[in-house]
Length: 175
Image 1 (cartoon, rainbow, N blue to C red):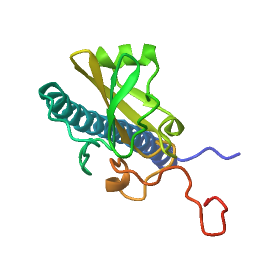
Image 2 (cartoon, helix red, strand yellow):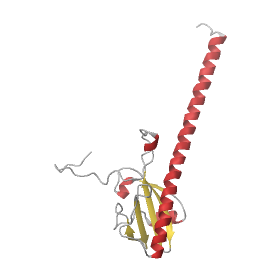
Image 3 (cartoon, rainbow, N blue to C red):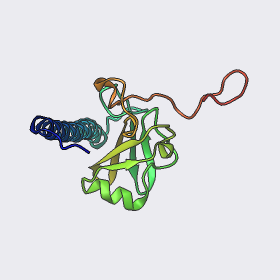
Image 4 (spheres, rainbow, N blue to C red):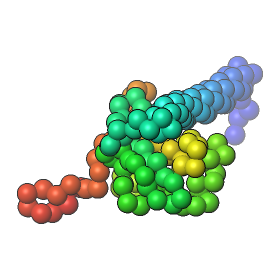
């Protein structure tokens, strides 16, 4: 095998360095975008939780709890293991979180849960806000991180795409 010229070796080294730099930049961009998206989801859900907790403390909470597109799409107020109030998209009978998870969110932790616990196809990010003896649990849906989004605006969603698979007129579940 003939020895490569100096020009060829320098070209290979420069190409390898450029490829490594582009890969590192892409990884950094992915990490920053992911963290920014989680921060946006957490801030919106926590803000909605604080507002709902204030209404709950004041005794002015409407039934069902109203949610908007920019606020949390899944809201429950749970006291002593039982659902006291919920949004239209939330389960009014079964609390979303288990007892240990409730303690975590009351301390300020954020939880990533499988969407099937909320009757959804996509993962849910849950934050909790203490409201006296109750806990306001706010969840926002987000796209699965493993699937690349079609556009940057579609990376994080706060609205409900679909509840459990709807039945068509034929009676077969929609896929």
